Length: 414
Image: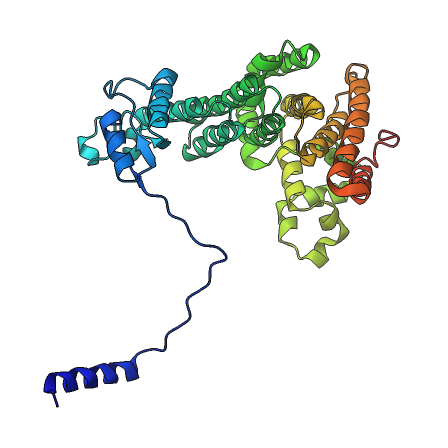
């Protein structure tokens, strides 16, 4: 017997005896496909020919170098795209004219990676603009950029001075997208979301920013907003501090007037209980129906609002209506747009509902007829859209839900 063969076979047998039993590989529902790509440069005729010879059809490209201080133009990007297409190579990504693929200490503009304050803001803004220029006809680009500019980036900064320029930039991006794609419903809904969400933290700042975009189309609304901003500017410093602190203490509620009305209907002892923070520490049994009717968020909203001086309360209440009206105006055009999501019709109806409920006294003649006509049109359009998408059952479900929402405004959906 060959000793080497004997020892090898014996060792193999021993290892096999102690080896774990094979497990059947997981079965994927469909084959996984990988794409061979490359990011080497420069992206010129010679390099593209090299890529094709090696079956590389997807690349990260580089427009002609102009130095790290110069931005790419739309023309630069189009020339690069055309060059790649001539060689049947897909330009999937590009690199910015800075932040080269090298050690960060050898990059002249490393601010994005080093979080270098204003320089970082500048470089991020340039990257955002680059993304716009690469796909100016894609609504998702504007949605993504506005969310990043208006939410994610300002959320990193503790001071409002750094937050507000990004808030403005996010709104500008939405308006830019609407100008580029005037019949895209998703960008109208994007503005609705922006106003609804950002006015919770920056109620007057968003109105101030939107005033420039809407004052010609909404003159009556603009007059109210100007008076709100004038009142804000005239506040004493102590009251200005109250106004600035309000968003940190409570979310601005869309149903503010309903909440205040329900509170006013209570007797004095019940109102005192709700305004006492110690009430929150009681058990559900001890809180009883009062805790059910006014949940923790509602109690926080009441305490924050009622702690304000009367002059500040008026500003907050008017600003709440102004943002709700603006949400109506932002979505009204979607009824004539296709495709659109049924959520846009529902959001428009609920915006009319709360705008009417929060409408200041004396302004009914100017706005209520518009709201009623808008509700009628949006309800009919929503039913038609639900029927087309989900059949008669879907249309009926939409009707039932909207009627539940509008039970406090009888006759408005008829």
